[in-house]
Length: 398
Image: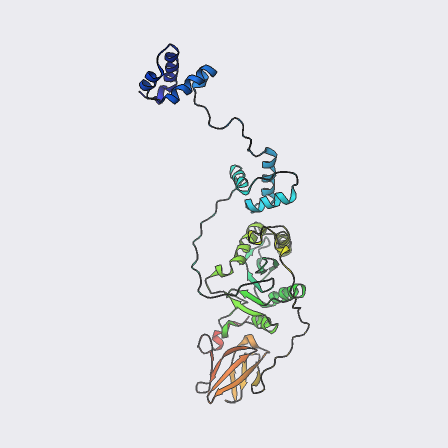
């Protein structure tokens, strides 16, 4: 027979007593339905420990030489409480940097400690976004690409809304700025950018989404903010609508910002800005990034060699072009038709170049950008990308 759960101890006692009375091991093992190895095990336990040796014993070793010392566990827990959103790899890097003369456990061990201490937050599984077919430029050095975006909005303690504007260097992940603004209007954004340009110089490209004030539904999506950047010699790059993963680095930073600096919201905009400033300092100077070899962004970023100009030079066009000003209503005077044609309110105060391609077709340029073509038959400007006529109804005035 085999061991029975309900009286397993009585069977073990019966087994060892009969064995000690002289019965053969092989016969008893066959009768009780156990292996000779199991029979010898309980016989040895009974001789060493008596009846107590017949109870099931824990498989956990009595001595664990590789067990993490309690004081190290306390250090891990304290560091996690100091940086509640950091994962095991970042915590391991920080502990090694700050604590000398102590063997820091591996990230996998730190992960087990956090789990044992109930310090791991369950993550929501996200659906993988479909990759976009549109090619975007890649950054090879700091200031090749700056990413700019508004991190939505949330209500402060005084019931006013806060609109966090964030600007980040794509190559180094360096967070150039995080400003608590009261709206997404162009004026506030320009003030923030001017301060950054004066401190860090100019980037080659500015990447954004298609929301205000970065883009509009008008001619080529231009806005006055975009025109301002173009006049500074900064190329504009927009991700495809509905594809935030194209700006994944920036979106990941936004998630960290939301977790660490907006919950709960501060009493007012000034208090919220203080939290943003502290977040920027810690993010750039202390937080390691796996993509940067577990080093903080500040160790990889350097200011641009393109200074912010005190004065922006006037636009120049080829001699054979007709140069016209854009009026306050977004229109310009078109000599061949001897009347005004609407272009875009984003270009108010700027000059454009008109070039005759053939008898009834004129090309319209702003700087080196082809805006579209004027057809004398229809007396309208047709945008290059959309091939739709531009009217004031299409323009988003920002």
